[in-house]
Length: 408
Image 1: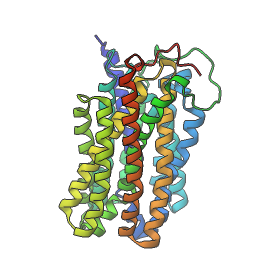
Image 2: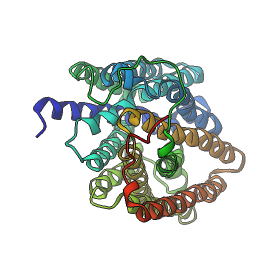
Image 3: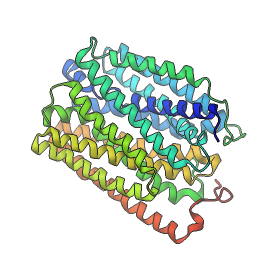
């Protein structure tokens, strides 16, 4: 039975995960205001969004296994400090340069904190509860996204300083969680005693097909996010006819609510079934957003947001569970960091490309292009998960890769 300290550490790590996703999505409801007040194009907004994953990627490459060496707590605190700097730059921003640098610091912070926090949730769970930890991790991620939508929408519509106040609130939340995180254990049993050195993310030979299937499924959630987060508010306003930021935020928070509810249900499903459902529902979601543009219906937009949330949840929880479950303990952080690397690389390519198409051709052609392209990604995830799960069923002894063969 877990001790009180282990339970507290589990939920502290969960709070760090929620903050990471809140930080990731925090400008979503403010992007239309930047476009209106500062005259920014959709391409510029997409690059502000993409500065986050672009900065995060080298952190994952260089520091992907850092927490395996210096401890989860130290890596988490470094990440929270960088997130705080990034959010404060948004509070003080005077032009696009401030926003780009702020997003880069947010990416640095999330890159340092999200993987160790996700791993810590597994380590502070009961033995054999990896899938439960993955489901709760997805749910708290959704809670972070929902906070970004509702706090951003409500404050930008009804409070003073609409370009800044939402970031002040987030900065306070980060500071509070950082203080609580000081109480985390310095080290956990799955860390290595070897000295850390700069090296690429290590995927053990025995884990590589599993990693491919898990990371593509995981990346599908990030690909879907590259449409919903930078363009969701614009779709609601221009195509679905929503003129109130809080209403738009509430509609987009359906995306997050669906993620949370689905994550809690997904833990009852087989992991590979979860991934397959995620691919199918993600493809359905992007085409429902296209249908929103042809019907100009808030109801269809609501359904698209809900379907996107369910698909995202299955993609994220399934992929994360695969990466955690099949990793040798001393390579777990590296496997999870590798999954985040694939996900954020996909997002850093998808968001600017989609923004450029929208700027050049309009929102509706951009949505159609995104739906076609992203559906290919979801199809690859579907085929890959079917192939690997079939292989594992034929060789049941390989369901859990022994640490003895999971070598560099």
